[in-house]
Image (cartoon, rainbow over all chains, first blue to last red):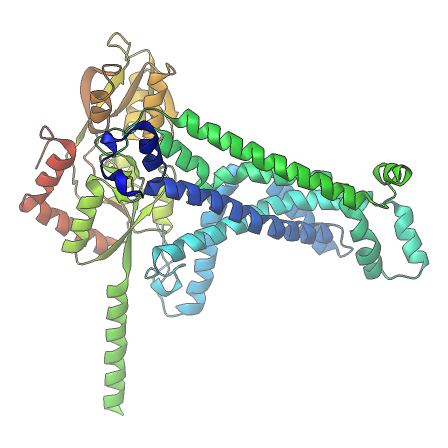
Length: 293
Length: 242
């Protein structure tokens, strides 16, 4: 990066460190932080949407829909994350490719499953075999978002389902007495009030989501823990200009600070949000706010 | 009309050929196993297999692209079609042959070795570390010693340094530079053990055509001595050659 970095062996400690921390691999390490933050920023709202749909389905009066919602919550919550991430993503990818294969290559005669191999016609490959590496990486990122959203959507769905049931029955009865339809009661009375009950559970889910990001490596995305492990490992002079011993402790210490800082910021934000949502609610928190005012 | 059909067919065939030629072969590797493959300071995949793989692609007239993948899921992702070859210091074994097919070996059957902090360790009854799902891990499990497995080669060494394991069992060529630079902290113990049927490229069993191309390229590299030059460059003069 810097012009004086051509021969690191001759440098003083500080200059050596400045060169070391700006090598290409380290830039990838810093980029991984952006990847993780980007994933969280995209996944959280999508997972919330999945959760909302799941909760709505679970409390639906239409029986099959309710089964679907409950089934989603029960199955996804029950399967270990690591199993889900290892197998589901490959299965999801194969499902996409299989559907494209049926549509795009109706004349293809070879079987899709040949022994252990999964073969679709070249035009059905996702991404296409001809696409550059960044397309593959973006597609991998997209798969990661979908997988995370499905897993954490199930947890969010359960929390929201509980939140919806926690809204006092009297509130809903009052709405009905005013002549509101089911739909109106749901959107105007139930949904605005349920957040205050759901938020503690949702904030838990958010914290777990932050900590689950190292699972990204299972999905083929180089996350920060992967880089910390690989950069911190012992480096011999034969393969790098910057040989060093086992520095993993320092890298992981840095990650510790990052994760703790990030969860701390989340806590502060969530606390504020909670205060605002509590305002004017018929809960003990809302009551306390009213008295204090 | 006939002419039109013929020219359309010709065009379609030409387009099909152009498509086939435009296909990029994706080469899957681990990037954590120097000198076979590792990530260099610039963040690129480097090492013996990178250099040899690029040469193989040139000889087979293929456009290749390198992909990094976790060792644990390196075979599932190959058979699922996320990349087309595994070129990651993978030894040819009968067990793996049931799932994928291999090219001929481009690295002679490897010798594995034990490394420990002192030469007084008990290799038969002690605690030995090895990387998960490797021939070395299989060998340790059979030897009667207690096996501790780690996801990366780096961790297997660290386990010996911090006393979690008495010794590590891994490829001799991976261990050699580490022992050389450890200032006497780590030493080779016991005899070297020849394991596996050499290192080859792994491909899908249904991909016979590509397998043939790479096989031919490896043969030609063996014939004109370029493979031996590369082996010596990356593994030192003592390495077994063809």
